[in-house]
Length: 166
Ligand SMILES: Nc1ncnc2c1ncn2[C@@H]1O[C@H](COP(=O)(O)OP(=O)(O)OP(=O)(O)O)[C@@H](O)[C@H]1O
Ligand SMILES: [Mg+2]
Image (tube, rainbow, N blue to C red; front, side, top):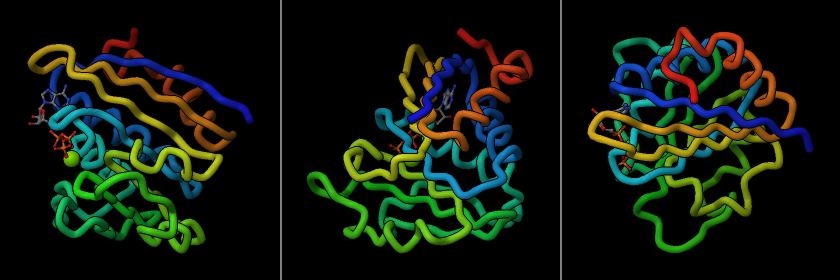
């Protein structure tokens, strides 16, 4: 399995959103994105940008789907935003209906993805958010499979436009 890593530090919320937007614009194929990081580390901020990049209409305001578990938004590809925070223990694809979603032309962004890390599809992107200071977030992306690896390569080419790459 081909794999590639990219690290970046954002200094304000807008930069984290911009990272999401940049990736969203480049996405052409269905993709599962696992988002990992503490409360308030920027997972939802990233998904807000991702939605913009996927041309989700601006009338949709993206918040953590904490009580609904899954929110779906229309865009160039459908965006499914999942939040596993309130789920007890480890879950698998079937528990949250993800096995069905994988057949859709969709981007699936999963907050607290570590709760199902063993059952994510082989091809996916993992993004880990670390709170380094008040407004400073260390973000580490690891792509597994060609689809995500190509996105990382594109990020490497444009790193200066997004934030302060490590
Ligand atoms: N560089 C940054 N990137 C992203 N968010 C930042 C940054 N600096 C400060 N923030 C703030 O941190 C918070 C991030 O909130 P967000 O909802 O995105 O976190 P989350 O990881 O989704 O948390 P939760 O697990 O509760 O859903 C916001 O209040 C945002 O303004
Ligand atoms: Mg959130």
